[in-house]
Image (cartoon, rainbow, N blue to C red; front, side):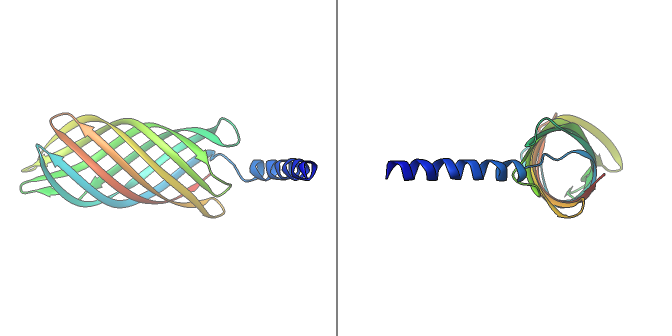
Length: 172
């Protein structure tokens, strides 16, 4: 009985190992994407919500079969308003670490610098800050993918935002 269990264990390990290697493929190469989602802005303790929309681009470098490191850039905007104040464009640049779950799905963590604009009575002010986020991507055909992401940005002047975005993009 012990020999049978041992042989079954070794056989399953041998058979499973190639499947794991085949089932992972770290995301690599250039990518561009469109995003749309939910934006919750907090200024001085007051919260307002609106729609988020924008464009992103990046490049991922495979470290091994399951992990890649990437560079991210994004330009986005929001419909969020506070009376006479409105959130404006948001610029982001940062890095990310991706982990392949299988050949079609990956998860990632991101962090970097962000700069947002607040417009009050047609006069704008910029705020510097940092962003952290986590997300996932699923290949839907060829090099096209869809994704979802949560991110938190914190700026100077008691200004922060929580965002949830859906993405659609392609790799080159």
